[in-house]
Amino acid sequence: MEAAKKMLQVSNAVIPEFKINDCITISVPKVDRGPSDPARVIAVIIEEKNEMYKVGTTHGLIKGWFNSGNMQHATANFILAEQVNKQKELTLRETVQVVSGGQGFLSCSCKSSCQTKRCVCFKASIKCNSRCHNSFTCSNK
Image 1 (cartoon, helix red, strand yellow):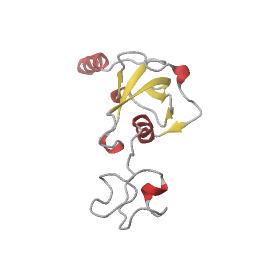
Image 2 (cartoon, one colour):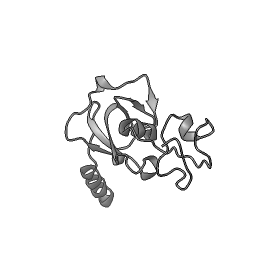
Image 3 (cartoon, one colour):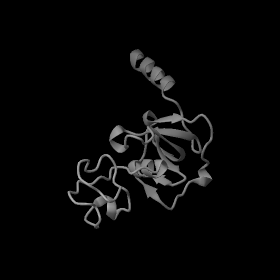
Image 4 (cartoon, helix red, strand yellow):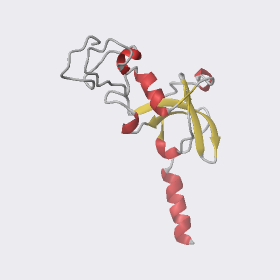
């Protein structure tokens, strides 16, 4: 019983406490971001339930609940709770793509010149990049 109490004290000392309206950063797994996307997203805590936190950015609320293991306190208050767009809900992957303005995970493997809507990049109004077909000619670069 003593060992359990000691383990709980150590655990509580290591895990930071978060409150509603705290500005935080959320770690983004490598599978959810492109090579040039940020590893962390700045957000603010909107709601708390059972030590799980609902967070949001200026682009919208992030779907799901996060635990304190995924979060760190931000160095300053970059976002206020009033600035969060509560009308829109995005996944973490979508949030990273909006924040970075990157192409995300879109890439095509066309064997023609990418001039029709059959091309994923052309359909999304995005220029083909180095992850797309690399040896074929392309008119969407």
